[in-house]
Structures are given as structure tokens and as C-alpha cells.
Image (cartoon, rainbow, N blue to C red; front, side):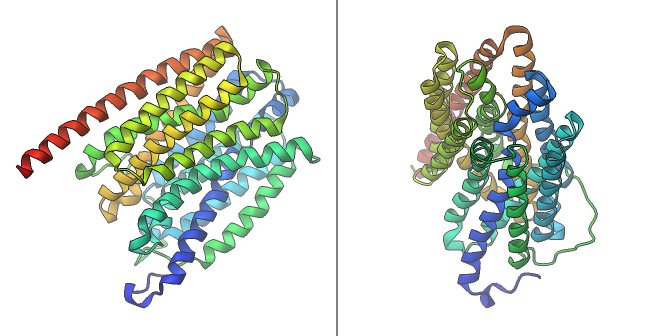
Length: 410
């Protein structure tokens, strides 16, 4: 189905369309974090180290980044719906790998396929939600897209944690449940209108790599660095926090683990909602500042071995990450020309997912030599520096922009 002329399309289907697309986006992203509270069970069953946990997790990020580089702009040519369906199919294949429980090779394969799914969804999901909204509702649709992304990521550990703790078959039922949700999401995609006016379904992949149009680069650079720092915090909680809860704090309830990770992503969603109350130029440095406070609290929780401080720090950091992430994504998406919007948004996510993977691998490697607590402290210190420097840079640039604007007015 192709786009109808704007004057022939009623507003009701468009409103329903962007909400339905956001729901599909959330279901797809939930599968990418579904294994988070289950890593401890896999460690008991297969007997691998914390470094292996971070490598399995990083395999997901590798899948995301490679997919964004190879197919980040593909939906601009073939249409949004075919790419959404492919993303859901890869998510289903990932769930099947985990259901087979055949050892580490299948865990790596499942996470890689999950990364491919997330890589496709990250760009096309965001663009589809925004494009299906009426022009007057674009701001609300932008919030729906980023909330679906972060909310979906948070719901995965919550769902898996409660099912694994209180229902039978802890390594089976979460993935069966997600397969059912993916089937419903696929039917929903088939009912959505296509937003690309002339989709060419047989177009071959034309990788653009990390492509940022020249007119977007001034907005892209600081937004991407802020996203890198914020996603580093998310990577810590989705890969390492479950082990810290179990080994250092003695908290082995999988539902509690899922709730802690969910709280971080919930705070991120709240931060994204607050972003709409201020300008992008204000939200970016503010988000970095709040992220630094959260990271300090996370470091303090590692030092004091305090669950309360860990949750407080995670929520504070998630709030800052959400502020900076939505502000950056909104600025980048608005500045990008329509013909390259999906490619530009995908490039933004490449930087973000580099932040969610590379630092976490460092934590896993350091934990082998220094222990999980010391590795976490080094990690938080490094990310604090990145976030603080970025925040100061953004604040000073905002002041310079205001001075130039005042000079032009004078």
C-alpha cells in the first residue's frame, strides 16, 4: 500500500496508525532485553564467567550496529512496513534460539539475531511513528516513538523477571510469550498505512555507512556524544547489574532484578516526556548534568554495596539519559532532509549502541582481574568524565548561540 495524497487521508487512521506503530515498536524492542534477568540461570546451567555474559550482551550490540550500517536507510526505498516485518521476523528467530537452549553458540546466535531486529527497528520504528502522525501531533508522536523504544526495552526484563520467578519453565515461558506478542505485532504492521510514497520492494541494499548530511552535523555531534554516555549507563544495568545484585547484594529474586532494570528505563521514558517542556538546546546540557548525578550515585552504591543507592542512581541516570536522548533524537530528526532521515537517525543509533556495548565489554574484562565492584567503579568514573565534558561543551555552545542570536536582533 502506498501513501494516499495528504488531502484524501482522514486524521483518525493516522492517529491510530502512529499509536499502533508505537506498540509494534515497543513489542519488538522488549525482546531485545528479555534475557537480562535470565543470565544468572544460564550461568548456572552452562557455567560461564561474567566476561562471557558481557560478550553475549555485546553480540547484540554488534548485530545492531552492523544492521544500522548495512540497512539503516533501506526503508527509505522499500518502504517502512516490509522492514518492520523483517525486524519482527528476526526477533522471532532470536526467541527460537533461546528456546532451543543448546549452549553458548545458540545464546550468541540469539543475541546476534536480536541485535539485527533492534537495528532494523531503531531507525524505521522511530521514523514510522513520526510519519504516521498529523503535523500538529508530531511532537506527541516523537515522544511516543522514544517512549516505545525505552519503554519496550524496560518491559523486556520486567516480563522475563516475573515469569521466571513466579511461573514454570523460567527459560521457556518468557520467549513463548514474546513469540505470541510478535505475531500480534506482525498482523498490526500489515494493517498500517505505508508512508513511503513510491516504495521499491526489489531494491537492493545500498549501505550508506554512518551518513550524516552536512547540514545536520552541527546538531548531530553533541547529541550523539550525549547519547553515547547515556546508553553506557543503560548497558551497565542491562548486562552487569543483575550479577551485581546477586553476587554483591545477595538479591537473587529475578522479579526484583527485572524491576530494577525496568525502573531505569521507566525513568528514561519520564525524562523523554519532560524534554518537550524545554528546548533542545536546554534539554541536552541539563540531561548530561542529571546523568552525571545519577552516575555518581551508582558509583556510591557500588562502594557502599547499597541496593537503595543503586536504584536511586539508576533512576536519576535514566532520567538524564532520557532528557538528552529525546532532545538529541528530536534535533537530529528535525534537521535531517526527508530523503535521508532514516539513514541519519540510524547513524545516531550507531553511536548510541556503540556506547551500550564497548564500555560494557571493558567492565566484563576488568571484572575478571579486579572483581565486579572495582570494574563498575572504574566504568562509572570514565562515563562521568564523558558526560560532564559533553554537558559543559553543550552549555557553553548554547551561550554562544544565544549571544549570536542577540547580536543579529540588535
